[in-house]
Length: 179
Image (tube, rainbow, N blue to C red; front, side, top):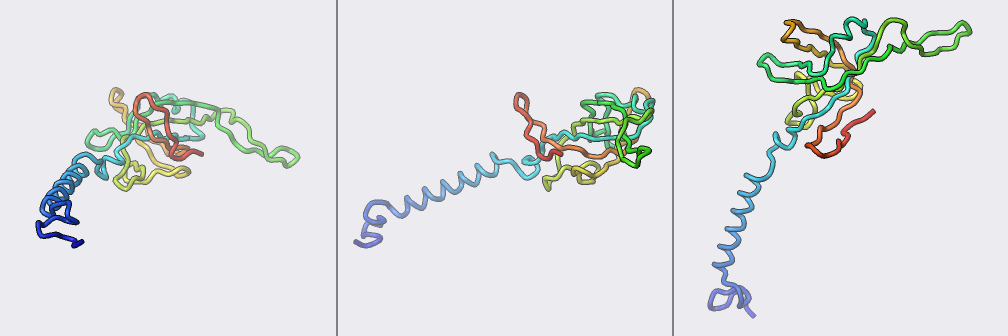
C-alpha cells in the first residue's frame, strides 16, 4: 500500500491537503492560546507576599510609633510595604550569672518589635525584592515608613524572620520560606 495514493490521500484515508490545513489551524490556535491566555513572566510572579520583620532593642517610646497601616513608599507614591500586624515584647538579652552560666533574660527597659507587613509583587526573576534588595530570611533591610498625617518618617533596620505568599481570598497561605 503506497504512502500517498493516486487521489492524494495519506494511507488511502486522509487527504494530505486537508491534513495540512487542520495542522496549521491547530498550530495557530495553540499559539494564540498560549500568547493571550497564559501568564507572562511578570504576571506569573506578580503576587503579594507577607514578610515578618524583627526590630530589636528599641526604646518603648519609639516602638509606639509603629502602627498597623503604616506604609513605606517609593518616590512616586507606590506602596512598597504596608504594616499588617505589630507585636511588642520585652527585648531578650544574654547575661552571665555569678557562677559563669550564660542565660537569656528580658531587658528591663528595651523592647523588640515584630512586624508582619505585606509587600506587593515580587521581581521578574521570582525573587522578593524591597527597593532593589533581594529579601531572604536572615538578612536585614532598612525600612523608612511614611506617616503622612504627622508629616514624619521613622526608619529602622528589620531582620527578615519569614516570607510567605499572600493567598487569594478564601485560601490558606502556602509558606514559601519559614524559620
